[in-house]
Amino acid sequence: MGKIVWLASYPKSGNTWLRVFLHNLFRDPADPYDINRIDKFSVSDSAAGWYQQLDPRPVTELSSEEIAKLRPKVHKLLTGIFPDNVFVKTHCALVESYGTPAITMEETAGAVYIVRNPLDVVISYAHHFGRGIDESIEELNKPGLQTQTGPRHVFEVMGSWSEHVASWTGRPSPALHVMRYEDMLTEPEKAFGGVVRFFGLNASRPRLLKAIEQSSFRNMQEQEQQKGFEERSDKSERFFREGRAGQWRDSLTPAQIEAVVKVHRQQMSRFGYYPLPTS
Image (cartoon, rainbow, N blue to C red; front, side, top):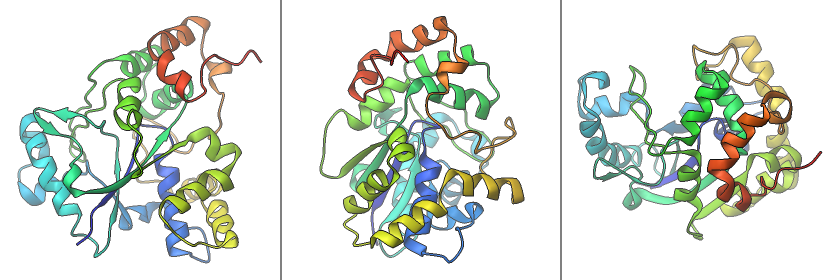
């Protein structure tokens, strides 16, 4: 029985992209790996089915406290899926929830954390969840933010964008690899190669470049256009929408930019998102 390798991020920060890359790297398929089968290789710790294995009631009938108490048991369950370590996607912050850790360290081998400029996150967040920009900014800025439990997913405790980022990256650890969404775009060989080295893999450069190409935004977008994507929100037309950095320059008003920066300046500065570029 293995342990969990967390693939952690605030929503709309590149988590799915990383998962698709890892699938293409490990499975090394001739054609790009089916984006609708990535849950066969990495799983989500919020998927309702895991909780119903431990409590058969619909998760919407469980209280948040009951879900929080089940979470460590679900994490233990996930370690038995594969004989080796298991990749688990999470949007939970590294905090306690109703007196129980949202991330069970006893079942953890390590983690990859992806960070993305919150000025761009808020735009993707709005499109994905069918919210207005101002409402999305309010959610990114809200301390202790917790999502709602629905039929398919239990709630996730996220906190504000800054709380989320600080919870995972505030203490450097050899078991933690932090990467920026923007570097995945502009320097993919360096960014994804860093993940490969973190896992101690001896993937050849041709294999790395092949996996990067097979998981490119263009390839994922084409797959979604052809057969849809199961993880797309019913509030959005597309999951893979633009996949670029700096959208905020064209999409946010000065007041909206200030509303984000005012709350998140410290964490933005840590990752090179502040001071804002002048051009």
